[in-house]
Image (tube, rainbow, N blue to C red; front, top):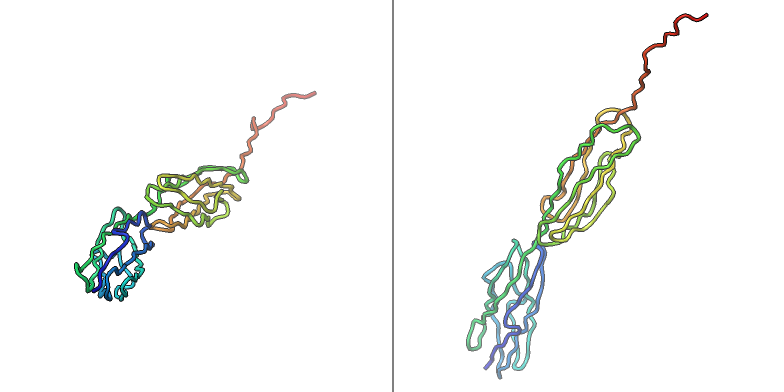
Length: 219
């Protein structure tokens, strides 16, 4: 009759980013003298599944099964795969485990206000993008909808617990209040994120002191 052996006895996926997936292989071996028939492989946690779920293994043969972990939440995730078969000891249970990770986007300050800046004179303010999450944060683009506000970087990555300073240069081209939005497209939930920016262009004043000249009597 058929028999069943499974290797490894358990699967540990390690970290996987929420929304992505990771695969590991499980080998089902038949050390018996008859055919082994696997009639189904089920999981008690939908974040783990196997393929194929039914097959036959001849005596002395083996079959690779791909197990996928696709975390839907952060933190430790565990489950069990149950392999139903026609040999003694059905079902065979294989513990599975992994951890869901995700980046988090945080920015401070949330607004850049430059105040008064002379026309044609650049002024620089910055904000800091931090990642208090558990996976790498990738910022694909940093753009401004107003050419008077220019970022010094167009893309970057921030590891878990890390941060990146982004400098924005404001060079007013005319008098009056100027405003815009810096947009960051990234891999964390909530993308894209925006930072409002504003400043006032001013012209240099001209004053004559004193206001008049009195020469008095001149011969």
